[in-house]
Length: 355
Image (cartoon, rainbow, N blue to C red; front, top):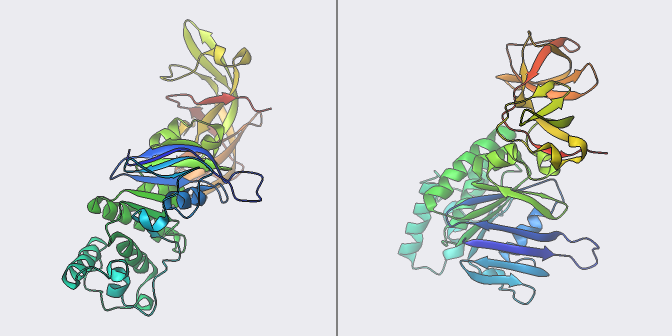
């Protein structure tokens, strides 16, 4: 692993709770990692610790096999060869694009410096803009200039702290895809902080979900969605609800009894002995629930959110259980209408039943 964070602990003076506690993860060279979580969860503090802007109270950070942070070691930020892109871009308004990008390589020979500026501008799709000023550029273009400036000195690691938060929603997701392409073309290793799941899924090879200073899971997007390690990850990623369920064994197979009926022939499912009396909560994603007019289970539409190609329906079963379902948008049912639904689950994610 190029970046290795092991049991990292960061606690601010005067604070009773650690900002980051026992966080461990690894990032391979050339990969893009993303830290995601609600505000105040510790993701920016962790990023700043990797940058060298915060000191570790415990644990260790290694870059390229060399320790840069521990309770007894602290390599200053300027000696870590790390580039940073901030949410406010931090461009110098009195310098044109070319001089902004060249700021970190001003000691390079002029020929090499000019060639590098031209190279990174080509990567970010802004060739020929060297003489323009930041105020003459759109928000998305300014963000690309900030990225080009961070890439210019050839950092061994690039850190991006919510770089798209000042942009509108549609532009954020599109730019996330474009930035991923730029970073991959540059062969850069990067760690990215965001609170937006769509950004995280669009840009990240690996994604870490944080909550109250703890890193709950470090995994690819598919695993976070379908195999969440903790209840918090299951709640935070995607749309879904927890439904009371009971696991029983029938003819050597585990059957899941729910308000939607029995779920069987499931590829992945824990044994009934995993929970007391087999009672648990099962995670039902919106894409686990299928609209089927002929299904015996009926549900009332409480809310619906139009998503273009589909609706996200929030539904209430006869017994009061709430579920959600993705339904093609040509099935435009009214609020209060009862529709047929059935569960179509390939693998079951279960947790200890909530009190």
